Figure 1: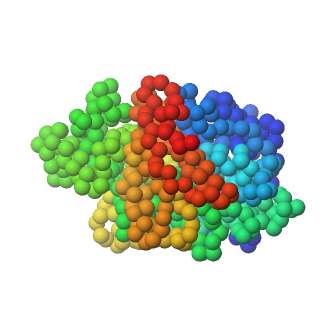
Figure 2 (figure 1 turned 135 degrees about the vertical axis):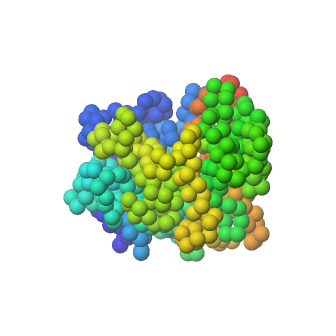
Figure 3 (figure 1 turned 90 degrees about the horizontal axis):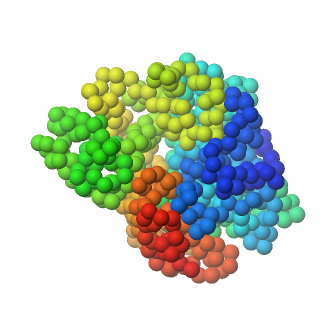
Length: 582
């Protein structure tokens, strides 16, 4: 395996430290994050347990009304071994992390490897609640990759990054997950933004390399059953969100037929000539959704109002855009309607806008745009577009050296994209911003990178285009699941476009558009949110069940129509409400 750039770390996970939840089980995952004995120097085992907790709770709805563990899903004890390493694709500057989990009860008759990719920008355990939760209990090995993103943050103040085991070390003293090519005196570098690569263009290759690693680790763990090859081992690729985009990229690259099936859930897929790219609609939404969501039709939408009123910053945004000649309307209602109509013209539905009130309230559009702009522009550390940077802050909100306890926990607590886990976006332009809307100048700059047609815009668009998928081979089973009310990755821009494109080119994907489902199952525990929407994970697991029946048992791939669920309302989720096929 000449693509590995580190030694392989092998660890055993049995008893009170299993593969799926590090011994926490469902009850422990529902509780508070595990504590460290020494907050400034956590052990590798402590970091792993907390990383699993963070990635479970960041993806799944584990709340008492959500139904996880009794209506769908489970968190059983799965003993086994883990193998982890840093790997590198040819021609790229920074490695990606690969991980293989081999359960002790590996099913030698099925010989199944699930290969998966973290959602969002998460660390290597970012798909544990999707692929791990489905594959490990049924005896599959699971191979993961962070796809060139992840939480191995580099801190300029201390000159430290993250070792393979999650602990921190000084640059030059150990092999680290990420060290920026250019180091500044202050600030925090993250791999997704500062690698100098365009990782999204390689997500499919990351997955295929993880599959290769998984097969090799099966050889190592189970020599009596070796060799494990794509010819004698069933390989199912599965992922959620960005991880699902990686699955579809890999499907288009898999000319040698390694993959036996691909399951993509809410994929952030970039379809050539169809749909819209994330950077395009995220920067549009970052500017216009605060204005559109002020419309009266959104009065009852969770997070669209603060104590019954439109947030002041959203009203200020509409006023400032109007004054600049960028938004029509003589009063607040007319401006809200103008913004809404512009979003409609771009393909947004009212349902997607309503769900996106959470994304807007939490300023996630800005977070995505800042990080992705830097990645697409291959920006060096300290040279991000718009002079953005990532910093820690003191009690007064001023940039500072990160507190040692926060820095020690980044690898397990962070989601791979600030603001999160004590790392914030710092924007010098905000100091000169108009009153009431300090983020407007930066968001306009981020949008201009897409729209203004200059040299930088051409460069950014080229990077986006490089991440477009190719057609999978005709015989590959592809199963796509997407929430109809997804407000982060609207289905119209992604799965709808992808499935239409496949069918127009002679492919036969299975597609489940799920009514009343949105993007973030973890948000369903938020007040007023879970009553309106259904979880997406049950349908991910159901799609994987159907792929298993086809790939392992030889049954025809199910043509069952999409389930028709109904929201749970104020009570707990009931199995009958999910509409799952038998």
